[in-house]
Structure formats: C-alpha cells, structure tokens
Length: 146
Length: 141
Image (tube, rainbow over all chains, first blue to last red; front, side, top):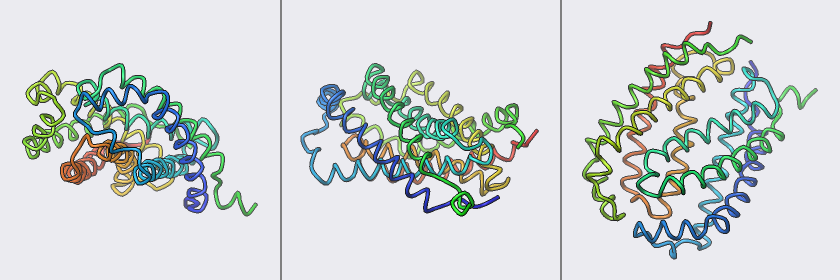
C-alpha cells in the first residue's frame, strides 16, 4: 500500500480549512452571533474580550488543523472506501461526529439543546463542505506521476 | 477489498466504549473538585451537572465514541495494517478532532487552561487504551 501523499494532504487541508473558516465566520459572526452573546452572558464569560486579531488567528488555526485532519483521514480511509466525494463525506462526518458527541455531553447544561442543534446543524454543513473541497485537491503520489 | 466486519465493529466498539467510560469515571474522580469550581464560575450547579441524570448521556456517548473509534480503525486498516499502532492512530484522529474544538471553547473562556491541559492528557491515555483494546477485538470477516 502506497503511503499518504503528505504534500497533497497539506494542500487539501489548507483548502478544507479555508472553507471551514469562511463558513464558521458567517455562522458565528452573523447567524448565531446573538445566541452566542446570550450564552456568554448567562455563563459569566466575557465575550467582549474576544474578537481581537489574536483570537481570530487562533480560530483560523483551529479550522486549518481540522481541515488537515479531515483530509489526512480521507487519505487514510481511501484504500478501504475508494476515492471520491462519498469517502470525503465519510471522513468529514467521522471528525464531525466525534466533536458533536463530546459537545452533546455538556451542551444541555452549558448552552441549551436548541443552541446545540442549531450550531451543530450549521457545523455539519461547514465540515462536509470542507471535506469535499479538501478531498478534491488530494491525489495519491502515483496518480500525480501518471 | 473486503467490507468492514460490522459485527466485530460492534464487539470492539462496545469494549472500547466500556473502557472509555471507566477512564472517564477515573478522570472525574481525579479532577472532580476542579470541574466543580469551574461549573460554579459558569453559574451552574455542580451537583446537578455531576448527577446520575447528567451522567447518562456521558455513558451512552462513550459507547458511541467506542463504536466510532473501531469503525475508524477498520476503515484505516488497509492503509496502515492491523495492530495497536493503527488502533492508536484511529483513536488519535477522533481525539484530535475533539481536542481542537475544546481548545476553541477554552479560548472563549468556558474552561481554564490548566483544567483543559490536565483533561487532555488524561483523555489521550484513555483513548489510546480503549482504542487498542477495541481493535484487539476486531477481525476482518
């Protein structure tokens, strides 16, 4: 079995991370902005400290790491499930499901079920779109040389 | 390429889930006081958040995570081969996904950095043990 094409994982991961960052920006700064503010106020968290350049960079970096993880997972499961968008969705969904399951353990009392469902429904769309975009960029080394 | 052995994913996943539950119970005992202090800071009742009712979703979700870990192990096996190294890779994928998201919540201020780091190290060990045990129970058809 050929090894994973690391260069293409990086390229695909950056593409996936860019898609996820763009989606998350729209989701959290516009669609769910008011809801997040209410959660922060209820939980004694100072959201006004957020929003600086440093925090923006942190969230872009998190999305980039998630993008790399999704494309690396896509590359890892490709020999079993084949190449293409179906496998990309499987890889992205596995990563999303792990996040969503853990969030479900504390979301009901930290946020609310309503907030959990809304943020995860939007997050699912963002993650799957990122997975498909990243996988579209990824190719095996022997495919590149062919 | 043979398909994934669903029966063995269930067997291995339930074993991994059981061990994840045992590990999480241990971490709760170890860091319970710090968690309670953080819950109070967040205007939450520690007694309610650590009640049996609140624990039920944790228990169910640990079993679902166990199944996901072993499904991931079965999916990456043709690439990396069978064995504990591949099992740790499978667990590592899901562990990293969760850790990245929790780091985001830590950044916002929902968790203190000290508690986040301690739990992350504890969960890394927990996931490595559970995924290795679950993968041990998995075989191709």
